[in-house]
Image 1 (cartoon, rainbow, N blue to C red):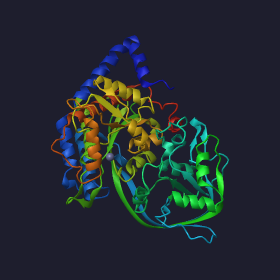
Image 2: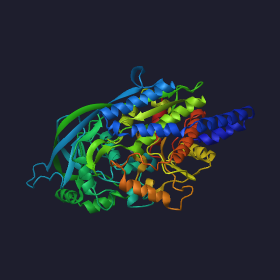
Image 3: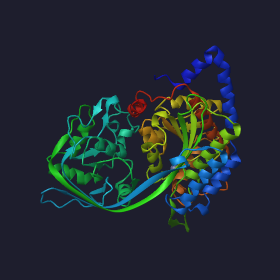
Image 4: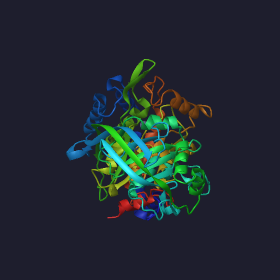
Length: 547
Ligand SMILES: [Zn+2]
């Protein structure tokens, strides 16, 4: 069942009576793609990015107004509600815990570790006080990857223990294993926590290393000292999680009779086994708790025929940072590019299907994701508590920051190599005269793990997120990269990410046309897309389809 969608489509169109049908669906795709209206796109974007929406932070008046606006547009278009109990909204309960942790070697005379200098730590439970006393085990990179024949927990009963692991994956040490310098999901700190949770550990401490981590200790501090914002209903029994500063980790290992540098090298080699440290840790976290809620917005454009209960999701997050610290006298974080543009794109795409009257065999479900900027919380809520079975979700196409710089000759998306969805995207792009260029830089920094499609990918649903092309029509080579760098340096996550007079919607329409065509292909293919054999999400994908 690994036959890629594209091959199946070609096989179908070769069967005599179905050839005309394939032609009909190609022209339907063109009809739907041409129905994309740049004026609608611009109007949605300008409304959502207006100061009146106060930066659309979760749980604020501006955030609620944005959700209401999206729901109203879905209703106006005549889409079916696909949220909670017959509404367009799905409730997303959020908990925020601001931690004050302590960490010390049990029974030792040595001074306890110093919060912020030596470590950061937070509670994974929704409790105002948690305590752990546990044996410490070094579990290498903390990875269990059966498809790569790798198991850092081999022979270890982690129950009740505190595991210490390295950030990143072993490919960083040895380019012949994992994907070399391309970061796999196994290298992400979120994965390390999820695996420790599956192993029944009481706590996890990730060793931060300056030579390998993609961000410095100061960034670790800015991310983990303040409020930890999570989906309130996230599953879990892990009690504490945190980071150890590298020098502090080396000291701790010496106290436990081990050498961090030697164990780090060993952890990069096949056949590594967990190594206990001869010490126990006392960890405690006192947290100030705040609860709030926000909403995902969901609507269905029903499919036609036997596959109509299945769905292709087309989504983008509508939240941004709200009102915050002023920069140059401006305190409203409008998030025009990130991601009023993507939300406007989802609305314009829904409208294109409705206006053209084109239906796919599977239903199309349009989603405005909540609280992405707080850590993919809205999409996690959808994956954890889906209003439709995940086995029926064929794919997710995510739109996070559209190209507002003009037409390109190329097209890019994240995770093209991960699943057969990549081929459908290639075919859709070709139909728009665009060549697909993989984004090497995005692969290295693990961009695939950082937007809403990923919450569903982790649950086994093949997914992708649009990227901007880089070869701009009428612009010199390198111009696209220059624009991207300027966006990152000057506007990304700042109040200056607001509507610019030079916004050009032609490139965004190109991207959305590819989305429409991909939705047509995936929405009407006989089989759902499948994960690549080498993908770290293949197992989750197979588990999802099991009855
Ligand atoms: Zn975004």
